[in-house]
Amino acid sequence: MTHQLHPQTLAIRGSKEQTAYNEHHQALFLTSSFMFDNAADGAALFAKQKQGYTYSRTANPTVAAFQTRIAQLERAQAGIATATGMAAIQAALLTFLSAGDHLISSRSLFGTTAGFITGHLMRFGIQVTFVSQTDVSEWEKAIQPNTKMLFLETPSNPLGEVADLEALAKLSHKNNALLAVDNCFCSSAVQQPLKFGADLSIQSATKAIDGQGRVLGGIVCGNVDLVQQMALYVNSMGISLSPFNAWVLLSGTETMMLRVREQNESALKIAQYLQKHAKIKQVYYSGLPENPQADLVQKQQSGGGAVLAFEVYGGQAEAWKVIDSVQIFSKTANFGDVRSTITHPYTTTHGRMSPEDKAASGIGEGLIRVAIGLEYVDDLIWDLEQALAA
Ligand SMILES: *Cc1c(COP(=O)(O)O)cnc(C)c1O
Image (tube, rainbow, N blue to C red; front, top):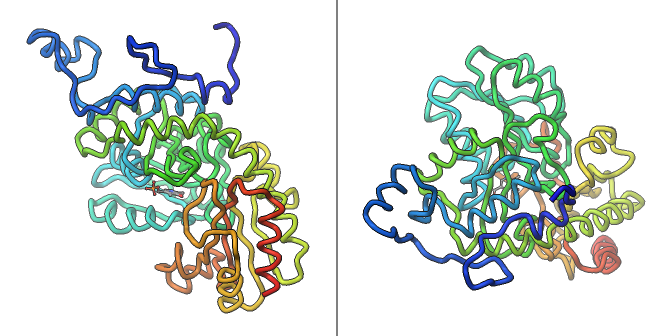
């Protein structure tokens, strides 16, 4: 095809592993192993002299179709899928970091990622420096001769602070380090970190890619060389994505662009409604035009994403009252789902942080996080209105 396909088309038609039966939808290859034609064929496959499938921990056609589809949306050469988003983060970090290496990471991290870095990476002799999400000079000062990777997620959870990907990619490459970006909050529908020089884009497929709160999965995209190295790690560690989950996630991928676009529009409308509400001290949403980082957001993202946060007057007691009064929003910490969700970060997702760290990260006792789904937006506004009045 000479025509350059739009991501919305690629999300649907970007890859398919076809069988002889002419099925229209991607087939589910639910099999743990694949047969060899004869002994010599088996030897050739294992020696990698012949391309083909041997065992689903190593590779599987349904998983391969999923990897190709997401890599296209990420503008990447390739992708390697994993059992969960955390497995994707593990693969991206541990394939490229060894004992004695140094990692620089943003302080604004998903809780389990922070736990993985402080509880495990450091135990394996990898040095880590935590720096500000937004101040590039802090990253520059943290560079050491053994720095091998810079890691962050943007926008941050739940305050939506945006990191400057181009500046951090330049800094990484000047120092022979990789830039790895957790792209989960935006998803490939809204942001493609590789376009700004990132080497690795990581996603929890559990969020916007599935989009319906059903299965866990993850994927890391990058160039062929980096992805091949991670594929060997994923195979050895046994953290591959199951073919069944890949098949569910492929269906999710097909509607992701439409879902995320609608969620972005609803989230912006809700953020603007909340800004005018007398009971609300502040609204945090990267998609707001008044956001001090609006220029950077416009450069890197095609929307603000589905998640926003707001601080109510009256601290935890008032925040809990709002959460306990909603009638539509689900009280659960997931996001990217068709069902909108509401949580209190101070006592849930960020509950393990010390009060000082929470204060330093701007996680107040009155802060509420909502993740917008696909319900009719005016119904969601009605729900927040009646909950705030309670
Ligand atoms: C959910 C999430 C993860 C972890 O993904 P799982 O699929 O739950 O393992 C990592 N990073 C971010 C930003 C997330 O929101």
